[in-house]
Image (cartoon, rainbow over all chains, first blue to last red):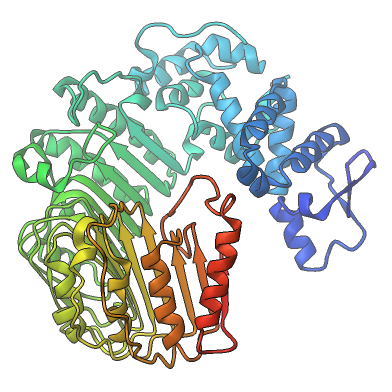
Length: 159
Length: 457
């Protein structure tokens, strides 16, 4: 068992087989730097719970492929990324910090899928972005790559 | 509060790399923060889909309007990158262009050199499938001619993959950074590959697939690994590469090999289609193969297995031999035994049958029993795709009665080792367990070495 501590001082016990999916922690264990509690100053407990849930589910990835539980895992992944933008970005930051390749891939793909074909207005609203560009700047950007802003208007919905 | 504000550009670029180019560029107008986020992407993929164009052509081409539009868009996009002095590690392009657009394309390659690209993939087709070597031969003018000279300034380039084109070499060109070269569906004319190799003095890996080759080829230079797959047209190949360690090939016809200067060659994998190939491989090829080659993999297709010669040349130093029988038809696996006798110092033997079709015995297989030649080095035999037929058992007995120091014989219905999969279906021994046990007893009783382990699974 490996103990992880979130930035709000909560401790979580995780099986070593699960936690070594994180390259960062795997390296720490291999270097003998993971004797007591591993502090994770960039991750809050809410996000860490999500990450641990993922690690525990994916612990037997190889086994799942053999026993035909791949579909089950796929369904889990689909459910897992069903979260708000704020939470998704928190998990991406945690996955990036902990260097968990598969989780990073899953979450970034989900983010990319959500933004696919969306209009600029829709993306701004989804990500709560305030447009601070002047009209001149906007025109300049369009002039740099007019092709990207041409064509039939795209998906303007925000879900 | 902007949700994405906490994410650094590098992390946002992972998301952008999974979006179409059109959606990516649109993010530059979201806000000031987002204006140049896209320029942190280290991997760029350009194709008609990613610039938001639907190609309705069914073959590998597309409408000339789209070809121009594509080059214009990509050139504009790369200019934005250059303006930010960014480095692109990996760049992939998937587009059919006619030769008339060479100058626009040249501009694009100029940007590639300036961006410090390390891995470049250029596929001059819009289709998903690669044309065969035969199709390339039919209409060579339909293919873009890529001049290697365009990369003369690409001093960071380590990996280059060219697909569906003709490559125009240059005598004076030096691509000293290049380590790996992949050619797929390329028409290689006489002397071209030799010229390319002389430009790439530090090339380590050469991979050639689905290419139409000239009658004769000479592999030279510093290359360490060479792989040909599904290539046609070649009749003779001369290997003159002092660093060459690994050579693998699958040619459409019988090809004659010359091993002029390959002092480092250790591993060879060979597959030549056509019935004349087996007598060649186990005859002249065996005679000429350099003495230091320790590992040989031979693939036999369709009826080739029935053309294994009974008299063979000796592979004097071969330690590891694998025989892969793919889609063979009505073959008699016992015919493998002379191969074994031709390898006096063999230590490891792998046999893999994949999709073998057997006919019911036509007449009786009356053959004089095999008289064993003793194999004094053979340690391990693995047989994949073993179903317990009479011929398979006969071969196994032959090996067991002749291998004096055999440690293990593995007879598996499944694949073995690093080769392709042999069997996917249900467990064949499930309902034949007593038979499996009796075969195991029979075989074990035949082993000349008391320490031999026989496993049937």
